[in-house]
Length: 116
Image (cartoon, rainbow, N blue to C red):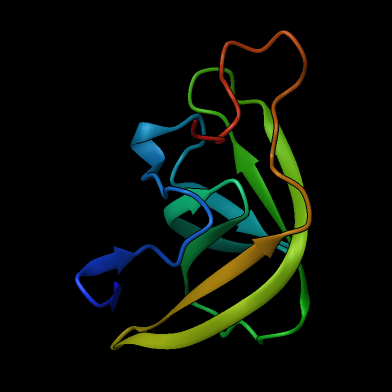
C-alpha cells in the first residue's frame, strides 16, 4: 500500500473478495474454454490463475458460475496484466478488467459485488 506522509492511501477502486465470500464459484472459464481459478474479485475486475498465458491488452470474456443456483454470467473486459506464478506445472496469474460489473439476473438472491 502506498503511503503519503503518515497517511496510507488505498490504490484500489473497490474491496476485493475471495470467491467463498461472494456469489461466484472459484472455478470459471475464460473464452474459448480455458479453465481458470478465481483468486479474488471486485466489481471492476477479477484476478485469476490460469494454465495459459494471458496477453495484456487483449479482449477477454470470462464465464462466472453462481454458488447456489449454477447461474452463469458472461463478462467482457480486457487483460490488464499477467505474470508467471509457478514453473512446474506452468501457471500464470492475470487480471481481467471488466467493462461492466457482473450481475446476476433480476430476482436473484445474491447481491452485486459493490461494497458500500
